[in-house]
Structures are given as structure tokens and as C-alpha cells.
Amino acid sequence: MRLISFKAFVAGGTLLAAFSSAGAAVAEVVTLVTPLAFGTHVPGLGTPARELAKLLKERSDGTLQLDLKEPGDGTAPYEILDKVSDGKVDAGYATAGYWAAKLPAASLFGGFPFGPNAKEYMDWFNRGHGRALYQEMYDQAKIEVHVIPCAFGGAEAGGWFAKEIGSKDDLDGLRMRIFGLGARVMMRLGVVPVLVPGSQIAKAFEDGEIGAAEAYTPAVDHANGLQDAVKTLYQPGWNQPATVFELLINQDRWAALGPEHQSLIESTCGEMLQRTLAESAVLQAAVLTAFANEDGVEILGFPDDVQAALREAWREITREEGVRDYLFKEVLEDIETFRSGGEAKDEDGKDAEAKTEEPMPPPPPPGDATPVGP
Image (cartoon, rainbow, N blue to C red; front, side):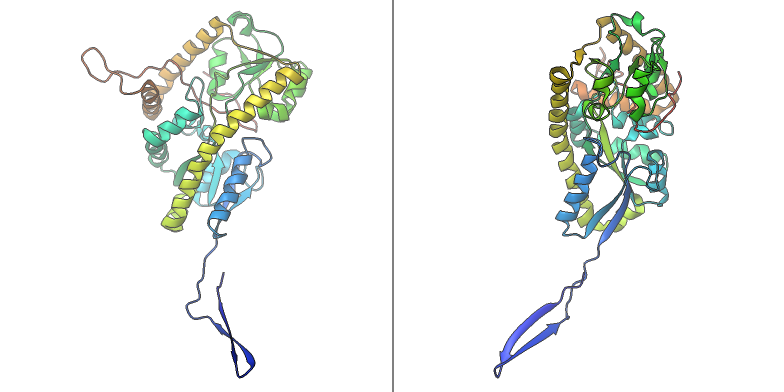
């Protein structure tokens, strides 16, 4: 953008215009090609990316722009991390649970069962070790990205069920659409995970292919029409009380941005966390109310024995994952210690192992993924 100063003056009754390019400023426009995990039309999951791009463009006077690429427009959601790291794209907008097969601790940063809610995540990022551990996970794996938590997508529903669940025995043999570590937990209660694309869940219920489904947030479930296919919804979502979205930027690209643009991105993502924390809660509450009052959906809580069994299965899995991956154990303990208000101590005053009463990892993606077995 070339800025030219115009000077107009009158001399001898004649209007003269002089153009001076001396000192003309050239403002470089930086464009970051940014593939997305969710389309910008998806409420709460894709819409924040669109708002982020809008704010960055406005606040930089057009000198910093995100060229958002919808899912499948050259990059599949599960390719985002590698493409950003390799410099094939400048940036990416996703949730860390996508990388759990490569980085077991990643699920702990994207939202996991019995884990932090959005406010707890934000506090851990801002006042705890969350940001440092988040970056450390990528650095230790030699993945060349700078990571910034940048939005909350809302809490997921506990699951849609064709029949009411009276006890944990009703889960044995139940065919359920569910992914990742959540699927592993359910498998230990006898559930059979079934692969169903998000857009086909309602039809799978209607065709009798599944008897239950853990899908997305209530707002996205509503957009997919699940309330028309099944009338029993369990809350709250034990599997993912919050969904954290990350902005990934290639490290060399990040360094080249300079402090002004870096600061703008960091501060805008911080604002987006605050904004989406409030907006997502309002959005999901409104949809749940509509489910009950307009769509005839019965919203229930899981029986006590089901909740206890889910927690016990999760504890078993966290022990297994902690043995396999020390960073998973370190991050989980740090989260739980932060949530408990400080470092846990044993009777001798030494640091004790943090409790694992509640956490768990994976965020279900929009595409197909095979559940990880136990």
C-alpha cells in the first residue's frame, strides 16, 4: 500500500497540485493461509474462526489477514498440524484432540471427559502452566508450530440415546457412535463403538444402525437434526465439558511476523477466549431449552452407577496412558493440581500424586475416525 501526500496551492490565480512521494510509507500486507477443522458455517465450532479473521484485519488496518480455507479445500482436518509444521500452509485452526494418535497429551489441551470447563481452562492457560506445557508438547515432538489457545467451542452433550438408560447394564452391547478415548471408556462398559459420519447420525438412528451417539455440542446437534431422530438426551457431557480451539502458526512464519503482529494475534485470541466462553454458554443453553420446550426432547442425567463406572474406566485409562507417555501424565497431573487449588501434599508434606478423579481426553471430529481400542 503506497501512501502519497497531496499538496494543493494557488499561485498567480492558477491551481497547482504537487505530488510528493518523499517519505512515502509502504505497509506490507501479511496473509496467512489458514485451513480450518470446521466450516465457518458451523455454530460455535467454525464461526469463531471467521470472527477472528475479521478482527485481525480490522485491527491491523488490513495489514494482517487470515485466508481461511474451509475443510477439504486443499487440506483435510487431520492434515493441518503436519502442513503447518512443514510450512506448506502458514497457519491452522483446529482442536488439539485431532493429534492424539501422534501426541497422546494433545487431547488434554482440546477438552476431555470430566476435565476442565472453559473457565478453568482459561485460568490454567493464563495463570497456570497451561500455555508453557501446550507449547512444550509441540516443541518436544519437534513440531514447528507456535500455538495459541484462541476460542472455546462449548461443552458437548452427554449423548443421544434411543432408549432410556436405567443402569450400566443397559450399556452392555449398545452400538454407539463415539470416538477416541471416550470410545475406550465406553468399551469398558460393554459399548460397541460404530463409525458414523456426523452428517449421517440422524439417519443411522432411523435405520437402527446405532442405539446411541455422542456427537457435538447441542447447537451443532440441532443443526444436524438429531432432535428429530431421537428424543432422549443425557447431560452433562462427561466426555468433554469444554472444547478448546487452537491457532497454530508455523514457527518461521511466526518469527517473521514481528512483535506488532504477534502481539495483535495474542491479544485478539485472548479476547476470543473471553468472548466465546460467554457466547457458547448462552448458545448451548438456548438450544437445550428449545430441545425440551419445542422439540419434545427429554433431557436426563446419567444414573449414579453409570457415572461411577465411567469414572473408574477413565482412571484405568489415565494410568495406562501415563505409563505410555510421561507428558500425558505430567499435563494431567498439572491440570488436576491447578483445579484443586494448589499442589497436593502427602502426610510428610511432600508433593503427592495429583488426583485423577475427573479427567479424560478426545474431542470428536467432524470427519470419520476409527475409535482407538483399549
